[in-house]
Image 1 (cartoon, rainbow over the protein chains, first blue to last red):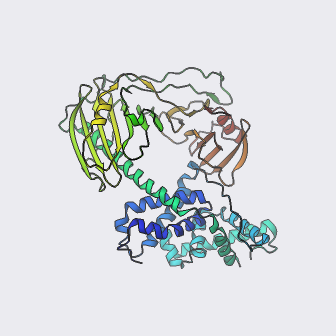
Image 2: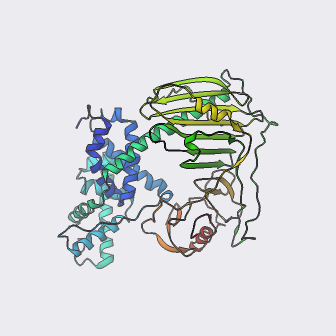
Image 3: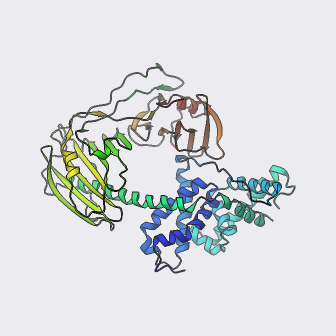
Amino acid sequence: VHLDIVTFDEYVAARLPALLRYAVMLTGDPHLAEDVVQDAMVRVHGHWDRIQRAEAPDAYVRRMVTNTYLGWRRSGWFRRSVAMAQVPDAVVGDSADARAARDELWSRLAQLSSRQRAALVLRYYEDLPDAEIAEVMGCAVGTVRSLISRALSALRADSRLSHATSGGLK
Amino acid sequence: MIDTELRRTFDAHERLTPDAAAVAARIAVGIVRRRRRVLVARLSAVVVAVLILGAGIPVVLWQAGTRPILPEATTSPAPSITGPVDGLVPAPPVEIVIPLSPGWLPDEVRTPTYTYTNANLAEGLRTLTYEAQPAVSGVESVSVSTRPQASPIAGDSDEGFPSWVSTHDERVIEVRGQQAHETVTTSISVGERTCSMTWTEPSGLIVLAIVTERTTSTETTCEIGERFARELRAEPVELARTVSLGLVPQGYHLVQTGTNGDLWCPTFGQSPGCIEIQDGQNYYAAENSTPITVRGHQGYLSRSPDGAVLLVPGFVRLSYGLGVPASVDTSDAGLVRLAESALLDRAGW
């Protein structure tokens, strides 16, 4: 969507909830997601004239959020502790077993490298094709596939280690 | 299938998403702060560049043999720790002073909302800032910084002012018997007027005073800032330290201190291997951290290939990065020992 006539405030009003959801999936933590999005959006504002004229402003902003997350994990995670997420009550109808399995998978996602996790989030949460994931992450399509393949292998291996996959991941 | 489980897991955790309205407000504040930061950095660079280049202003630059008299830190043994402990030595209870103190303050900051202090001991920089939060208009902050010689930052004075600066003016005024370079900028979008003045004291000490006012006026006047600068007194004032280490690794130097905590490094300057102690308020325990006990409080230790963070929520946060010498005990017990030595004026510590 070309955003030629959209102001920064209008963009924030329309897209902030989605960006926050994306950041939660990246970081695994609501507090850090707030920080990542705030930091990225302040910088987006500084370049808004250019971004709103881009062919795909959403992709540009998503790349800035992703890079902020990757940059923090790479160089400064120890400078700001990551908050422990207080997971709200599960939705009605969510069985205890299903909830436990998802919480376990959520925990295992935290063990992945930041790039592996970002690649998984972009494919399985944002539903982007590999070519767009590569664009967001600034790498080759082959690298994206390799990151995802290794991440899935790690998750499967962890699952086998933890409970011999009775109802676990296949 | 794992891809299905991943999708379900992500969807299930959407409930962690923070409130967008609160984050939008934080973004708005962040934008203003960024602009302010850029502007103050810009003003500082301009005035220091002017000092270095001499651009028509007869200032006395620091020269060898005319080093200003800057009160040095005083040291004395720590009250309760008298000798080396497992490679750690008592940290000298340094007293940091800024050689100038305000003789007059605007009403808004006479009872400041925040007081920030910062001392970069390696560079001799001292800063004292009082901040207020005026409801509609008024003084937001007054700040005075001193340094014994001109900063090396210079050369970007041709960049002009940021686009959000509405009006600006530069002139030479008299401050404390010296010629000072004054720069005033206003910004309607930030809602602020910033007045910065810099001059060199007869001792050679370089002074930078900055006063910001919340206003949407585009008048480049600076009566309040000029009064603040002119009524600075040559009376040293001690800069508060909120948290400090009682024990430090042998050979470490205090490089930076102030409101944000202490930075101790293996060399007298920022370098790899520094250890930082900060107030632990507003920090949260990291995921996958190891529970520890510090002075009877629950703490958390997180390690990575790049360093470690020891957090006692509500009290202290100790961290170090790459480059810590092998002689420093960075075992769990060693880090707990360092954290337990922290001096913090807070009930329960």
